Amino acid sequence: MAEGIFAAEIVEECRRRGLLAGAYALRRPRGATFVRRLARDLAEQRKAPRVLVRRGVALLRAEPAVLRRQTGLGAEAARARVVLRRVAGLLAGHPHG
Image 1: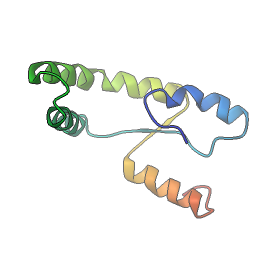
Image 2: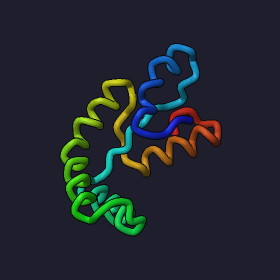
Image 3: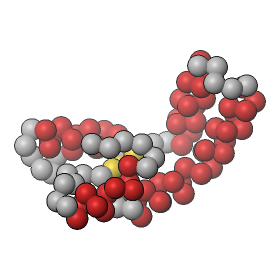
């Protein structure tokens, strides 16, 4: 299992080696992601609030391109509940969720 923005980098090689059970890029409502990220960063006092808002807006705008890149590398865009259902299915021995 790999997780994170660079996880899609290994999709094709894992597929080639027969090691890939699934590759997903989470598709979430962008506004909700912005709010969650901002709340987390403010709570952790990572940087000044103005910097966090500016960074959050930049990430909000970049998110569609990030998702396109991930899917271009072989990940399937899916909502979290779909991914969780499919992973549970894999763990239960049902390859298609």
